[in-house]
Each structure stands twice: as C-alpha cells, then as structure tokens.
Image 1 (cartoon, rainbow, N blue to C red):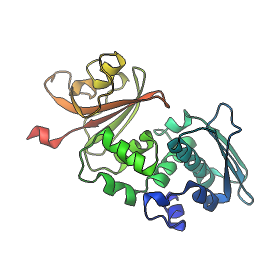
Image 2: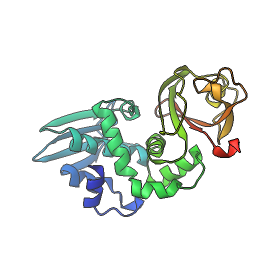
Image 3: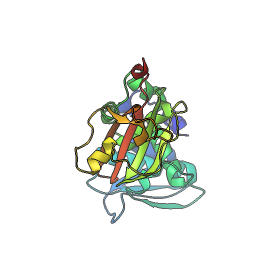
Length: 251
C-alpha cells in the first residue's frame, strides 16, 4: 500500500517524497502543527470527508516526517470509518510485535525509505551506523526507521538490537544471521555495555566485541568476536546496536 501511494504521487528520488502530498493523496488529510500536549501526532479523519493530521510544534524535520507518515499508515491500514489516533515517541519505537502501531511504523518506513531508492544507497558498502545516518540524512528519516529498513533489505549478515538501559527489548536479524541473540541484560563486555558503564561513549564505528556478549552458544569460546556498532538515541531513550558477521574476518 505504501508503494502504491508513492507511485500515485510520482516519486522518483528522495526529494520527491513529500509527506504533505502523500497525506492528501492517502485520504484528503491536511497537516497542522501545534495544539498537542503530551503527544507527537494525532490523526482525526473519516473515509469520506478527509481529515487532519496534527503534529507537535517544534519537532525536527525527521521526526515531523515520520510522525506524518505513521498517521498516514493508520489512515491507509486501519480506518474503517471515523478514526481518532494519538501517538507519542514511545509509539514510534514499536516495531517488533503484531500491533497496529507496529504496522503503521512499517508502513511509514516503506513510505519514507522505498526499497528501489533505499537499496542502492547501501549496496556494496560495509555495515555501520554512520552509513545509516548518512542515508537517514538524505531521506530525512529517523535513524531507528532507517536501521529497521536496512535489516529488512540488506544482504549482509547483520542484526539490530534495541535496548532500554541495561535490558534488551527486542532484536531483528537477517535470515543468514546466526545464532540466536541473547535476551535479558546487556553484557558489560559489549560496546553498548561499556557506554552504559561510562567506560566510553558511543562506539562511533564497527568494533570487535566478544561474540558471547550478544549471542547464544559462545560462552565456551571467548576468542570468537563479532563486529558491533552501538549508539544511544535520546528521543527514544534507547540504545541501537548493529551486529555484523564480517566474512573477511574468517579468511
């Protein structure tokens, strides 16, 4: 549905992804800023007469665009008549369950980072958060949405781990990535753990981390490493970690 909507607005490059035009095309939705307290976005609409997306004033452009795209997702996916939805930053961090909020986030990710434009930006390049940040800047999208889309489309053997404080909340990996990612507490021996312990800041690049720090089945193999890149996102109050099995390390 996101791809069909993009096709109807003749999107051919990242600058063509105009969320105001997409909102109107999706359901005659107009966008207004301000008037929200304790929320980032709200959708009020019906299927016949259009409606309105309201966005909290003063939001960065990346957050504004994702908020609008998320509300467009609700309109396209979940409207069976009158619809009234209110969303916050916590809502936009939900990607890994079967809820309507996760569906709207996936829709927004595809709307703002369509695969035919997104994939050429990382094809043949080594995974790292800096690469994802450069793509996010070009498409004016959030780093979390860009990271999730990357895991969905890349052919690299990578995984994304989302943590709150010392607790791993959820993870997503490519089909080729093995084995299972640990649950529970972040290891002190990981780059994410070192940041939480104030030993160092964000990793800033891919660094070698003991595989046992993140993966099941490596407790008896302390010499096996995996590459890790971790960064804290204050908007979500979450750490995102990109893990990579680099084939060159095994040669």
